[in-house]
Length: 285
Length: 254
Image (tube, rainbow over all chains, first blue to last red; front, side, top):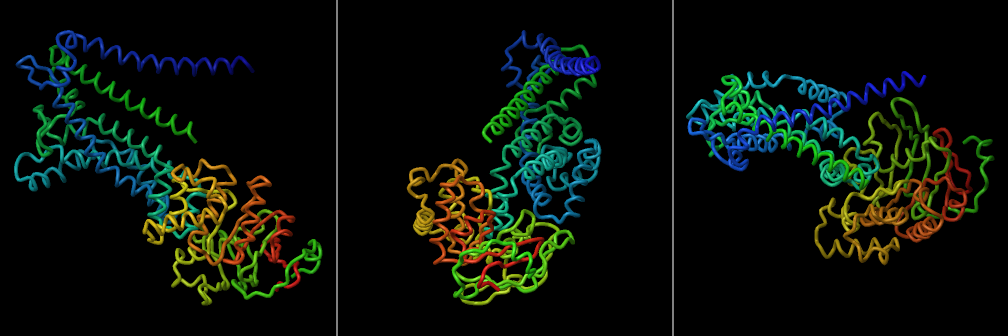
C-alpha cells in the first residue's frame, strides 16, 4: 500500500516543483531578454521616458501610466457595483433570485474578453464618439467600464464568499437590536469580511492590469504620453501584442520584454500583498 | 397538559404570581420548512418577573424566544400561526401586526444570545451602537447612556480605561456582560435571554445571575436555561418545553 502512496506523492511533488521552476524560468527568460535594454540605459529611464523608437527611445512610461489608470478607473467603477451585488446576493435576495444571480455571475466569468470588446466596439464606441464630439471614440473612458464589467464577476464571487463567512451570531446581533440591512452591511459585514474584500480588490486590480483584449480593441492604442481620459492610449499588454505582431528582432521587439518584466514584477508584488494580508488576518483571528 | 409528563418534573420553590401579564400567546404554532416545531402554545408570562424556559436541546426553547421579537423573520423557511400579544408602553400590541415594524419591536424587546456576540467595534461603540440606530447622536447623552449601561452590568470599573479597545478582546464573561449592557442601553421592556450563562465559568455566571435579579424591577425577563439549580435560584416561574409543547410544572402558572 505504501508504494502507490509514495508514487502519488512523488508525482505531485514533481508537478509542484516543475510549476515553481517554470514560474522562475519565465522571470529569468524575461530578465535575460530585457538585458540589452537594461544594459544600455537605466531602468528608471525606461520606466519614465516616452516611446519614440525612431529616436532610440524605448520608454514604457505612456503604457505603464495607461495600464495603471485603466486598472484604477475600472476598479473604481467595479468595486461599489460588485460590493452592492454581493450584498444583494448574500443578504437581500430571496433564495431563488440569489441562485439566479449567482449563476449569472458565474456565467459572466466564463465569457471571453473578446466578446465584451466586440459588443462594446459596436455599442459603446459610437456612443462615446457622439458624446465626446471628436476622435474615434476609442479612449480610456470607453475601455474602463468594459474592463470593470470584466473584473466584476471575479470580485463578486470573492466578496460573496467573504460575506458568507461572517458569523451568523454577529448579523443576528444587529437584527436583534433593530438594525436595518444596510446598517448590518456597514457595521458588521464589511468590518468582518474586509480581509476577503481586500483580496478580491487586489485580484480584480491584477486582472484589470493584465487584460489585453479590451484595452487593445477599445483604448485606441496611441503610444503618446497620457494627458486625458478621453485620449487614445495604449496599455502595457496591448503594447506587447502590437509590437509582437509586426516585429521580431529589433530593439523595439526587445523592449517588450521589459514590459513583460514590469508586469511580472507587478503581479508578483500583488500576490505577495495578497498572501501577507491573508496570513496577517488569519493569524489574528 | 400531559399530567404524567408534568409529574416527572421536580417541584420548584417559586413565588406565586401576583403581577400583571406582559406577554400572552394563544394557539401559537411555529413551522420550519413545513415541519411543525412549536404546537398550540397558549401561555401568559408575568411582567417584572424572571420566567425560565427549560427542556431538552432542539425542543423549541430558543425558537419561542425568537418569536417574541420576530427574529424568526430573518431565517428563511419559517412561518407562524396563532396570536402573540405583548404589553408595550401600556398598550397591548399584537407583535405579528405588520403595522408594527420589527425594528421598533426589537428595540423594546431586547435579546442576549447564548454565545457572546460583541460587534467588530470598540467597547464604547458596542454600547453606543443601538443608540446610533435610533438616531440618538447627542454626544453627552450617548456618553452618559454608555456609562450607565456599563455600570448597570458591573463592568464599568473593568473597562473604563480602555473604552476604545475592540470589544472582542474582552474575556468571555466580560463579553457577555457587554452584550447585556448593549441590550439594556435602549431600556427594553422585555429582555430575552437565550442560555446567557452557558459559556461562562461559575463566577461569571453568578455575576450575571445577580444582575438579572436586579433587572426585574425594570423589565420582564424570559430566560432559556438548562441549569435546574440556576432556575431554582433566580426564576419566578418555569415552563418546560418538550417536543414543541409547553408544560408548566409550577403552581401559579396557567
